[in-house]
Image (cartoon, rainbow, N blue to C red; front, side, top):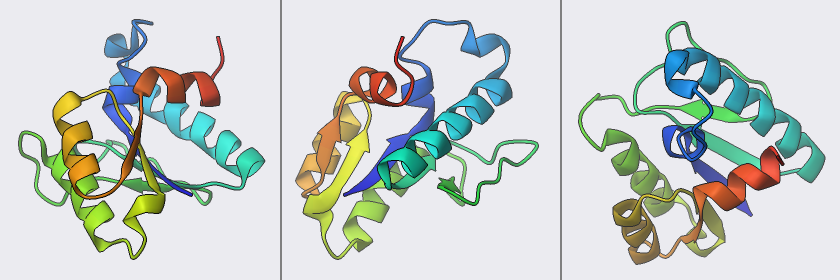
Length: 124
């Protein structure tokens, strides 16, 4: 199973003050995804709307962003990733964005809600 994570959607599913330190929240999400991916032997890509500044690197997961920053560009990037996957039915996208979820299903991918996914990687 391949996981593609709608980064800011997963971060935003818990009102834990992430908006006060957006980069810190992104860094924490990547760290949690790394830990979870290693434990589950999962193929994980997180997509952020734009490149984090300073950059966030990982040797465990893929940290991605669209080449062009525009409204919904992360969603477009996620759908493109599914379309280029030889087995789109084995791609699970973590998001609670309804429009993106519909696009993922139309591309033959699967959807896991952001809340459910966040509970997997970072139980309360």
